[in-house]
Length: 365
Image (cartoon, rainbow, N blue to C red; front, side):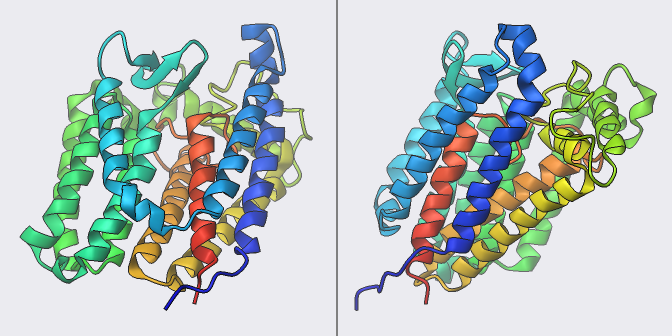
């Protein structure tokens, strides 16, 4: 029996487009001073954001109309290409270093971030793999280890860049898919303990990560070094109060807060639009996650359900980490706020992923 197709879930489209609109406005507000100082053009980041927003929306409406089963057929080759790009980006002279990480491929100001492609590539492949082998997932060796091995290899390549933030999102979304497919909690809890031990090892192996941890616990120990970003972020949020200083009136964007248009854009939102503006953004994300989980629950088959879980999990984990860093709950790690932060690969691929989610919502039971 064929699947009956209906209109996509409007309550996924509305918050996505509203968040995108807020992002375009706030990227200009947060970056105008920095852009004028660096490029002599206060609209520099706004122009780039508009280009990628248009590309992303076009991609979203394209994938919204592509039957999700197409991704099942090409998931293996997609993952292979993603792994290839992760290897290529590590080659000196080929991969471009930005922000201390060799994580970009491209020329000049324009480039792509292979780790962003890997996030959606991993979601598609694990969804196919686990939907076809669901009966084995309760077995540790034959069911759980293969998907964890693929995920671990991708995480390892991303950590060689190094990019802990993107790696954490990849692992979070992947584990949600694995858990939803029926993996045993006992197995996952054992692996969780191994993962915590591994994370501690990663922190000890790189002194700068240890500094970030200690700065997170008490940023005022090193206010001009490791704790600088956390302190400046809190200096932005605090004066915002209930209604904010007003759109465009941020003080911290005047070279005090690093990366105001990307990693710390939520700080500028809180400073200019206050508690009300920040709460509105969180409410829109909450609606998007709720409707995404509804699409997963009502999906026509296991493959579609796991894709929906992975995509909405990717969004949720990224939001939690980004805002957790901004408000001082987590150590500083470079990760963007979905649909809002300035970015090319991240924004375009996130909108493309939402298009796949929308297509799944068209076949909901």
